[in-house]
Image (cartoon, rainbow, N blue to C red; front, top):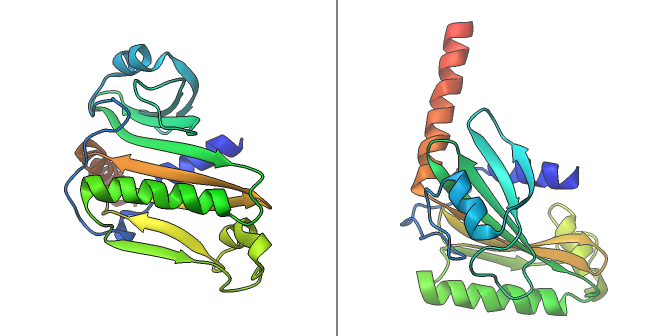
Length: 200
């Protein structure tokens, strides 16, 4: 159930927070526009799927052609006509009370992405802004709204974030979006506006 909620949150992530940049190539040895069958063949099959609407489905894939060290979860949004249009990868971090490993992983991938795409347009790396100010409450702070935030925004279509799950537990998420996803989102917005217009 938690994964379903997470996947839904990924889909409805607002683009208004980000600035426009060039669309990145698909990561992990995958390609934008791949069909469901091609994705299944290239990734060893699916672990889970969640239907977003009549046209789009989020798939949890077993193993992409290229994997990232310590990343164990890979999600791909596929449109029945447009193909692969969004990719999300996640690393689970455990037994890390002070956030030492989480911060090291965050800055390692921030540097790698910066080397490839240029410095992020915006980075937010603060904790202890509200309760959970102690050094051993790093992930509790990241989980609590307004207490802390570790994120790097490389534009509307590429972002990375370190989230808190519980004491000593967090997850690092990297999200890529394609031009196909932008088209799909625009079409969906128009469709919903037409439904409102015709339905009232």
